[in-house]
Amino acid sequence: MTSTPSRLLSRIDRRFILFLFVGGVNTLFGYSVFVLLTFLQLAPSLALLLSTVAGVLFNFKTTGGIVFANRNNRLIVKFVLVYSLLYGINLSLLKVLMATGLGVYVASASLVIPMALLSFILNKRFVFSEGT
Image 1: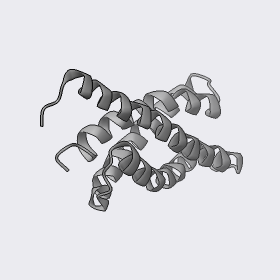
Image 2 (image 1 turned 135 degrees about the horizontal axis):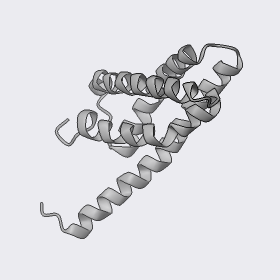
Image 3 (image 1 turned 90 degrees about the horizontal axis):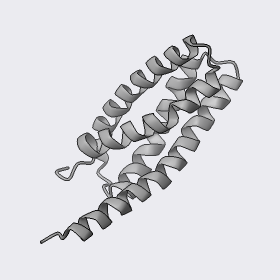
Image 4 (image 1 turned 90 degrees about the vertical axis):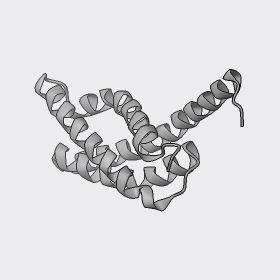
């Protein structure tokens, strides 16, 4: 099967658009859980952990099925490993931003886009790659 540059660009655009939509839904879900838990006075690190766990389960199905058209449930281990790494990076950056004087909500919100982009790259390369 041959792939012309325009077909490849179309595929990238479609996947990226799906990623933006699904990522928006996933981000809204995860951030809402985080805000709710911090509002209930959980420590930001615990709220981030719990919202990440809830988000991973929700995201696995939406990201795999909708963005990458891959419903292989065996990929959950790789997905969890990627999200564990993302959690560590997110927590580290959240602590750094809060140490500069930003409030927890602003600090966390400022990380949404960079963390979403990193998530897409890692999922595309390591979880839902063409060979899986």
